[in-house]
Amino acid sequence: MNIIFVGPPGAGKGTQAVEICKAKGIPQISTGDILRKAIKEGTETGLKAKAFVEAGQLVPDDVLIGIIKDRLAQSDCADGYILDGFPRTVPQAEALEGIAKIDVVIELDVPDDVLVDRLSGRRVCPGCGATYHVSMLGGETKCAACGAELIVRKDDMPETVLNRLKVYHAQTAPLVSFYEKKGTLRKIDGTSGVSEIFKAIMNALEA
Ligand code: AMP
Image (cartoon, rainbow, N blue to C red; front, side, top):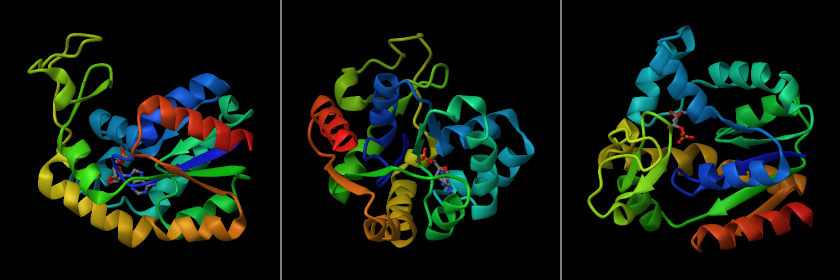
């Protein structure tokens, strides 16, 4: 099954994608993770993407379409995948039509005030990629999984968070009606607990 997760930054796409991929035995393809890795490694793609990512702007469509084309051609995608963070614009969605057949689009719906709190309180591990929220850390500054010092992602800084939400509403929200018209969209309330949201997504995928 080929699945897209769409929703604003902080909606929980990454968290849920990991769990659904485990349950379904398919890979999670996060364009944000691919770009962050490329930036860290200083590849050509990373150099092109760095300034956009750090400012909370979208990286140009042609860069992303190239990344996805290469990734979906790999053998682990043969039995399905979850696209987490792609497409993010209507031109990306149109390009994807020529690359893959998408079965279901899961929209995680979360109001802006909840998103601002989630993103500005997010702490990530630069070592293993684990994600935390300050409210659950009780002052702890190290990763429970690998012991590395937790950091704030550059694009989770307050002014960049507001910019990312603005970018989402202007450029990514139109995808909802794009997929609604195709009949593949399933809307999920993303404000409840992680396990409730997981169950709702699994039900939507089986419906
Ligand atoms: P994410 O981890 O999905 O929030 O992505 C982090 C950042 O990577 C975004 O704010 C964008 O700068 C960039 N990015 C990720 N996916 C895309 C995409 N599909 N199109 C353009 N930029 C993207």
